[in-house]
Length: 168
Image (tube, rainbow, N blue to C red):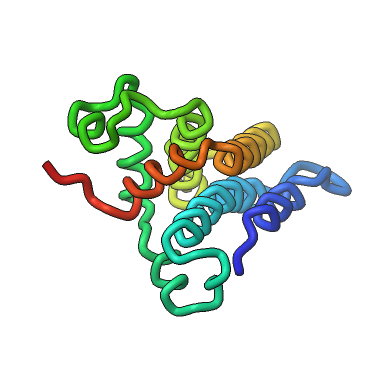
């Protein structure tokens, strides 16, 4: 099982003070990427736990549910969730006008961390600092905590948007 906390710890370990000289660009980039993936996997686990159940974490069905979410849909839904009030389509389907602060924090972090990750992984002209890596690690850590403490019904609605399409 992929553990979000282990990814956060790994991201932090990549930015420990170097013995000499400056931080290595590769380690800063990998730290930013690992921070995003910690939140991504926390969301995947939450979705599979809600749909299949924690007691079935070793099952094929759990694996299918876990792997059903892609990065593009995650970002698109999170951009919608961040709107306040929600779009008319989402308000009608969800029967709420906005999400809790915890879910809003998760959605904000997903969008920002995904942008940082793309830049870190694919933009060779970008440069990153220790502060950038520390910031993304902190943002991911706080978002994972926010996801855990979010009201259960809000989590169910958020995960439902990620796993299923809103029609009509």
